[in-house]
Amino acid sequence: AKLLLTSTGSDDSRLNAAIVSPSKDMVPADKRMYALRDVTSTVSCLPLQISSIMSKKIAERPDSLVLDVKFGLGSFNKNVEESLQLASGMIETGELCGINTTALVTRMDSPLGYAVGNWLEVKECV
Image 1 (spheres, rainbow, N blue to C red):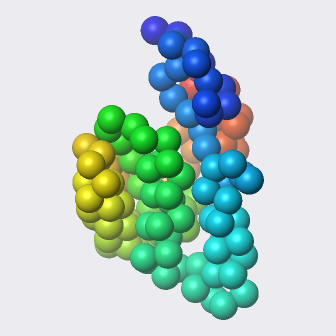
Image 2: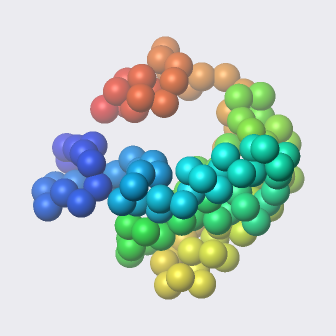
């Protein structure tokens, strides 16, 4: 199957994935909320993390959602317990919104491939 990465809102029936970030049309308050969390030292606040992450996912109205929640040296969450709490909260939020939600909690201590960086890693996979 061919994986096409495109902007959200595409009518392309082959679209199997989307990479979403806040914009004026998609969860516009998220960027402002993150800036506010930064200046108030609440970036690590679990409910605010969950709402920030899940607002973008829920806005796309998927039938189901699989989350990859990282922990380790390359992750915001350094230990597995923090990531398990985050995953649990995101699953609960997704389910409350009627989305069948699953999460994998995976280690992020070293690169899996040769590329490092979000877009480079996606390009390497595709």
